[in-house]
Image (tube, rainbow, N blue to C red; front, side, top):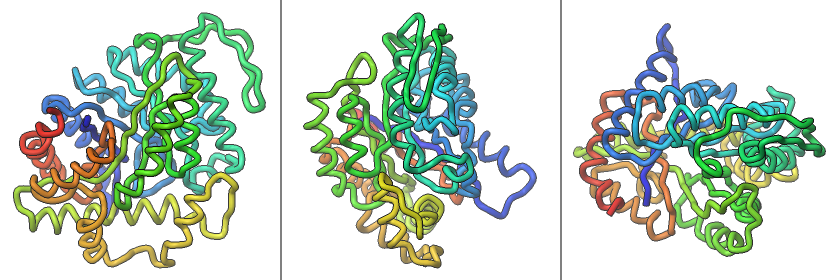
Length: 363
């Protein structure tokens, strides 16, 4: 199983005048260390307006800096939002190809359609159209990378004959992924022959039926690109410490803060709203208390005992990761920068994990 990192660039209050600067540059130092330690890939999200939870509205810039500072770690655009009001597909293809060039062929290209109403409403995106817009853009982008002259006429996008430049240096093109949260998304990813990027806030085993369906359906895929990317990557939170008590207090509480923030900002906004293809988000919203600031200490303890967090001493973290191995996950994406864990502690955690945990899964 491949071990990677995932960044939101969290930036919790209280702020000071260099808060955002510190978050970005500390994350870049962490990625440089991860490259030296042998982590597989660094992924970065695209989010907008999600105060405290994510300062990563321009992931291509962060990832370009990652590429320039590293040699081996792969560069995961995870994910770029494909509905047109967020990003024109031509610009997506151009920027991704440029990132592949700068990274010398290390790009992993992840796609998505957005899950939060605060982002969709801010860009005047109709939730009822995100799936069809993202699907059309996903069909277009690999063709832009591989065809000398490209043109397209569809329900959402129209492009006259043009040469789309630059082209990626990975041939025929970088691996393509799609963010998936509900069963229908796993089905679409399989049918289109792209890899799955999925969430594991609950017990990892809950992913089992969706993963089995994906593996079955992808056998008959009609890939949007020129090859099938039959891989499943799942993200979770990681903090590894020799001191189990510190892991529970610092790591567990920080994980609880991140998950609570994510739940309130991503899912909470769906209260009272409906959209035909966002069943998962609407269901989650129904389970969120009006006061989403739960008792973080109790919540941390509960999630460390039953959830998929990789938080604890090396023995605990190894046992949690084994659950993902048994499921058949190809790659796990570790969130290490939750905003509450100090930079120095994150660096120590990355080193301890690489020394005491990672070798078991790389072999």
